[in-house]
Length: 238
Ligand code: ADP
Ligand code: MG
Image 1 (cartoon, rainbow, N blue to C red):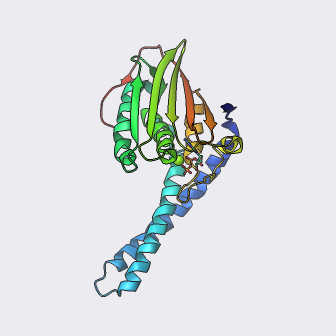
Image 2: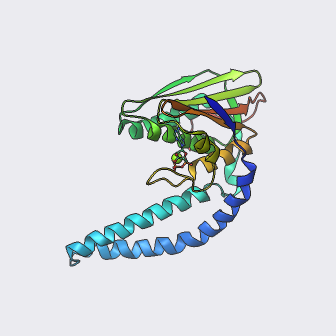
Image 3: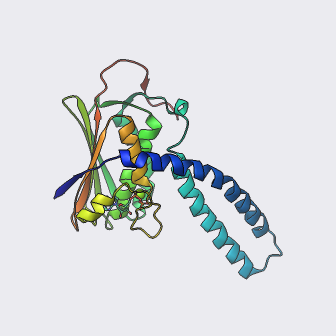
């Protein structure tokens, strides 16, 4: 196993620029998709055209997906209020959400969370962070793979591990993580980890990856333990 500390700073401005561009592109995409969907529903449309229309709509869908991932970094700050968040709640919500996704390739997720692991952050962003990390773990895993998520307190820190026994990565692959559009998947966006790095940095956390080809990957995330009392995030709906 070898380790690589990831630098998030170099990606900050890239993200901001891309978000501005993404904004301008999203509206026309939505308009074109709307028209295509309208014509596709026309009962007189010939079958082979119908098929082409679906392909066009699917492609626009992918483009929209890329753009909404980008825009999620650029939401105004007032929407991103930080509060004292219990990691137990976040990770239970996230794993519940991902179980359906994992089951498709019969992957299972094991969760082991110590109580009182409080982090000061926006709960929506924390969920986004762990959805991305666990989704990657699922996508790297073989059928019947097991993903293990562990959370514990260590001194003044909360440590979260996302461990998979999947394909693993070479040193070069680990080095490339977080670079915008870096993806080895045919349908990947290569934006997931860039977003993760941004979120971790925003709340003074750290993230690094430990990986071995053919053996698996562990993502290590650390946040400062929040000890101050204040408005806290419990089970309320988002
Ligand atoms: P995407 O998932 O859309 O490809 P990400 O930014 O989430 O984009 O990940 C970038 C790339 O990093 C992936 O395409 C994959 O090659 C690699 N990667 C990330 N997580 C893992 C993992 N747990 N195991 C193996 N490779 C991974
Ligand atoms: Mg991903």
